[in-house]
Every structure is written in C-alpha cells, then in structure tokens.
Image (cartoon, rainbow, N blue to C red):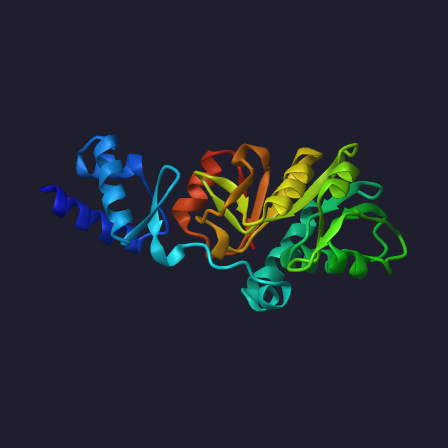
Length: 255
C-alpha cells in the first residue's frame, strides 16, 4: 500500500471511531509507529484528523468552547439523572465525609442525598452548597476563594489551601473530558488545580461523567486514570473505551 492510500484509509477509519491509537494503526497496516506518526502529522496538517496523545481522533470531536451551567444543564439530561442516582451507591456510611466537585452531574447527585443522612460534606460549588444547606444532618463546608462565573466554582489559592489539610472518605469529581491516553482534563487551569487537589485528598475517587465526555481530551490534565477508582457513566460509552478503562484498573458503572 502506498503512503497516500494508507493515509486515506487511516483518515476513513478515524472518521468512524472515537479514537485510534498509534500502536493499533501500526499493527493494522504493518508499518512502524514512526511511519504512523508521520501519516498522522500529514493528515492533521490537512485538517482531516486531530492528533492527540498516543493517537488521533476525528475533527468533529475537537473540544467545543466551554459552556456555562445553563447550557450544561440541558445537555445529556437523562443520562446525568441516571448517573447521579447510581453514584449515591458510593456514599460513605453515616458519619463519613465527602468532597463534591462543581458540576451539573455532581449537583444532581447532591440533590438526591437523603436530607437526614449525617455526613460531612465539602464542596467548592455555590449552587451545590445552596442545595445542601437546608439538610438538617449535613455538616456542610463551602470552600472559599474566587468564584469563577462560568461554573460558579470556588478556585484559586484560598480554595486550594482549604483542601490541603483534608482527607475525606470519598470525592465525587466531574470532568470535561476523559481518555485512556490523557486521563481526566478540563479547559481551565484553576479548575484543574482544585480538581487535582480534591482527587489527591480522598481515599476513594468516584468520577461522574456522561458518555459524551469519554474518549476526549481537554487542555489541562488534572488526574491520571490510576488516580481514580470508579467511573459512573451511561450506556452510551464506547465498548472499546470501557474495556480499556477496565484494563487500566477503573471500575466502570453504566447507569
């Protein structure tokens, strides 16, 4: 197969898939990984594919501009409800402690926590804190810091300082993107920093992410797959992605 034919075949294959790795293409076409990388570079320059860490993805899956809460609430609403309900399984026993990351899916989970469940609950989300404030048994803490208007999340040095001395039982984390190659990522460096701190200061990390975020990469990585324990997603996750996550030690729950 000539280089041009191989490159066209690679572009067609990537157009049908969420993500294809360099190693997979090397085996499929019987060429070295260096040759595959050169092919991908050619296709990327032509705007036919998008190169990512360890492989490539269709240009249609390039990260979109970050949405505000109102737009996020409308996206994948049914899946988010199912994910939120399934995530409740991972609440610690009465008297335990949790960190709840800012996000629309984590907010839905927070609203489902039984109001008489006695837990220490810590969040950097203003909307989540407002939802939990009336729970009679909640020992609620809202992390301080600069409030990022787009997500209504506390970020910055004050929020990071408040997390530093903590060790909670479970952290419920949202993400803008999750892939086997890049891990968990988000567009904003300050949000990435507080998410990274939450992951670091929890004994058990549960990620809530609908399937539209799986197989994608974003600007700033805040956790590797080895840093998380469970991914709660929906049935739309690509089976190949789910299998790879399982192989990497992540429990995958399809809500």
